[in-house]
Length: 134
Image (cartoon, rainbow, N blue to C red; front, side, top):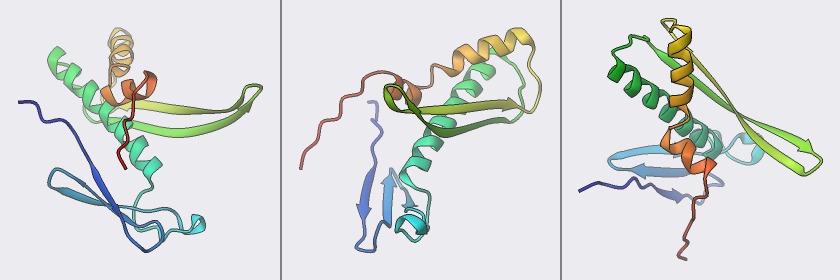
């Protein structure tokens, strides 16, 4: 039976410090001091960006392994960019992918296509319904 991913977050009484639990792992969440936190861990946005970056890297590794391509280390950096447009504020995610071992041009084209299949990025690109219970 497939285990669906889930995460639980408990926000402490100390400003924005929280502890998240996913399976047997716990990890801190906080905000920067200048935003009222204590900077004891990455912010929710930083975890979100890391989620996309790691998913893209894993997706690429799985494909490269299937194709028997040795790419060495795969580095994915994702950052947020906010722009004021005529339609209002627009958020963009900037993704930079690099490989320790240089792929051929043909491999690069395929890897770029495959990188778009990351399940986490797909959640952002398509409508994902959030059902809340309070």
